[in-house]
Image 1 (cartoon, rainbow, N blue to C red):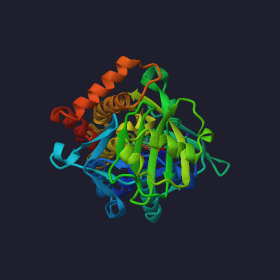
Image 2: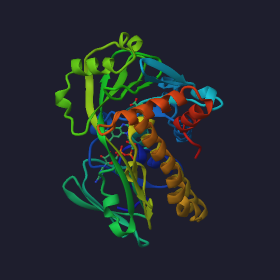
Image 3: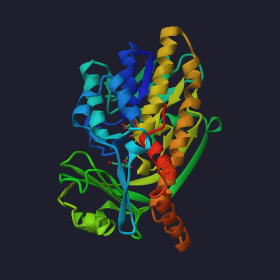
Image 4: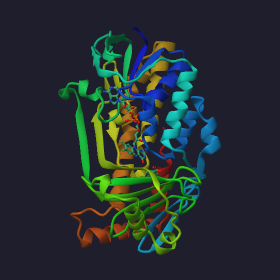
Length: 390
Ligand code: FAS
Ligand code: PHB
């Protein structure tokens, strides 16, 4: 088989890249080791930056997003039995974020790809990118029990943190930076109205909690749990009790509980692989970087990478220019590191670290006090949360 761009991974990075390339008349094939239903069963990101919405709009995927997405122009920081609203719009000249689940974006992308009749191969095995340091890269894999080779001009490694693409790069050619946090997020999804019309990020002596949503009838909640915690140890009742224990009383009393239909634990880490380009192989999204979800940046960074890479590929095929491809890694990493910093900062601000003492807790509370009483400090938070420009 031959195509112009072989895309490994059918998550948001791979599907959005495929959608933009198809729209530009650039042939591409998407391969994934799982199936559509598995991909849609993953509950992940919930908050979209305006830049992300713009890229999705330009790719023709804005209809349901604008119809069902919730515009949020603020969120609350809760600590010391109080909560303080961060006025995103007022602090950023009118910018906001949109609450629309990653699952819905993935569904829109999968539907669009099927409608356009673009080729995706699922349930594949043993995907290996080859000869990407030469002029004729190719990908080998097993599909329906038979070996398959995809010859291509470029390979996009959109296969997430545990994928095959980054593993195919010689370790000597790459530098990795990592911070693993001593806790994870236990997330719950329930068909109950959210406790507030905006998100609440809570710093509490018992640990971090986050009140989010997917719609006005579907809530998404998280509580910080120790690293290595097992989801089986958490009944719904235990979750609801712990969530309410970490919120200011006036919110805790208003939490509507109900049966969970998704409950899972995500480990938290910061990770960056540099560079993000190796000849004709480009790493995109979680394949190249991971952030703790505290700053709601993971999915938004993936979209930024896709924006830069698709620009470069379109320039290559349309104008014969290599400028965009040459600039991809540096452009993407500049934005990635600022989001890695912000996500690390929000995580250290809001979570209780097992090794922290009374001094560290006083520093956290002093920073929260400063953030909620200084326009300059709150502006930094707001500017990063709504998303830095591309
Ligand atoms: P993805 O991991 O989404 O997709 C990679 C795809 O590649 C998958 O479909 C996988 O099956 C496939 N693949 C992997 N290895 C392969 C191989 N060898 N061969 C073929 N295919 C292969 N971000 C936020 O902003 N907010 C959040 O709350 C949040 N919560 C998260 C919770 C969890 C548990 C995880 C893991 C991530 C979370 N994220 C969150 C980040 C998440 O949203 C990612 O940023 C986003 O999924 C990135 O998309 P992709 O780069 O497409 O990677
Ligand atoms: C979510 O709704 O899943 C969500 C929202 C904000 C975050 C992280 C996750 O910072």
